[in-house]
Structures are given as structure tokens and as C-alpha cells.
Amino acid sequence: MRLFAQLSWYFRREWRRYLGAVALLVIIAMLQLVPPKVVGIVVDGVTEQHFTTGQILMWIATMVLIAVVVYLLRYVWRVLLFGASYQLAVELREDYYRQLSRQHPEFYLRHRTGDLMARATNDVDRVVFAAGEGVLTLVDSLVMGCAVLI
Image 1 (cartoon, rainbow, N blue to C red):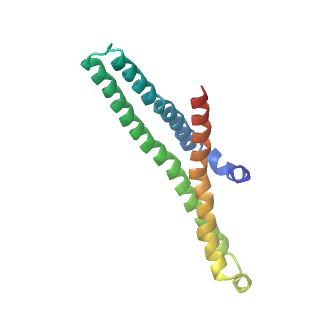
Image 2 (tube, one colour):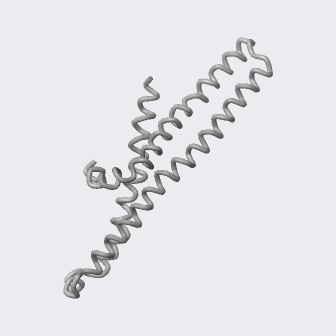
Image 3 (cartoon, rainbow, N blue to C red):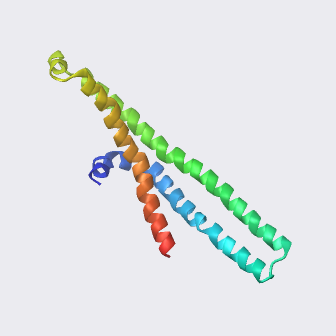
């Protein structure tokens, strides 16, 4: 959680993207609860012989429509969330490069080039992973956990 606090400057600046992604994740979580309910309704209706073929087709169409909507919304939240995390990677690498460019030659004698390159790749990638996948995991687990309990 400390990493999220350290990245709060970025989350505040990109709040629209993150809020949009979180809102879409909540909507998707709610929509994902509908198909099991629809299957239960259809199974009950078929076993009790209350449904006509038209009603069954209507419920199937409802499930297909929900699947298409979830697919489209997932695409949008991925663009929002991972687009923001990719932008963070670009900014962190640019800042790191600017910082390295200002260093005196003695700095490069004290620090190995491999270590500096590892920071530019591995460390930035881990931060970006937290800003993307970490947010996704946190929100998705909280929302789905609460939605299932309700």
C-alpha cells in the first residue's frame, strides 16, 4: 500500500482515467452476476415447463447481449487503466534519464552500468505493474467479493 501512496501524485493527475476504469470494473462485475441468474431462471422455467421457445431465445439473446457489452466495457477499461500505467512508465523513464544525464562522470565510476540499467527496466516495470495490474486486482477483488456476498 505504500507504493500506492508514493504514486498518489500520478493517481491524482490521472484521476479521470482511473476513476473511469474503476467505474467500468464495477459495472462489469455487476453484469457478470447476471448470466448465472439467467441460467437459473431458464433451468427452472424449462424443468417446470413454463417457458416457450420464444422465451428461451429471449433469455439466450439477453445473455449474448450481456457478453458483448462486457467484452466492449473490458476493452475500454483496459485502454483506460493500462494506457495510464504505460504513460507512467514513459514518464518515469524520462525522469530517470534526465536524472542520469545530470550526473557527474564520477557517479558512473561508483555505480555499475548494469545496476543503472536494471533500475531503468525492472524497477520501472514493477512500479508500472502495480499501477496497472495492482489497481485491477485490488478493485476487482473488492468489488467481486462484495457483489458475491450481496
